Length: 100
Image (cartoon, rainbow, N blue to C red; front, side, top):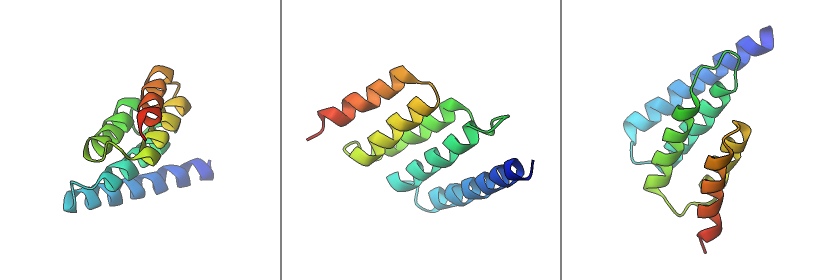
């Protein structure tokens, strides 16, 4: 349908923009988090344009740069729940809870 095509097209454009931003500033946790969010959208398409593993590689890279970012941990946990990754979600939630 037209909506699916627009969603796929928009996600591809967003992914290309974030990849370019990462090329310019690879140490940005925000860019890695943005990539994770775009990949999440792509992983939820049918058929998916991204894998579940790609989503969490991007989240984990962002968290490696900024491990105390509570909002990022919450986003990662929500993404994990949305993708049926309950164990992974619990891991991010535990990290979030342990932060001051």
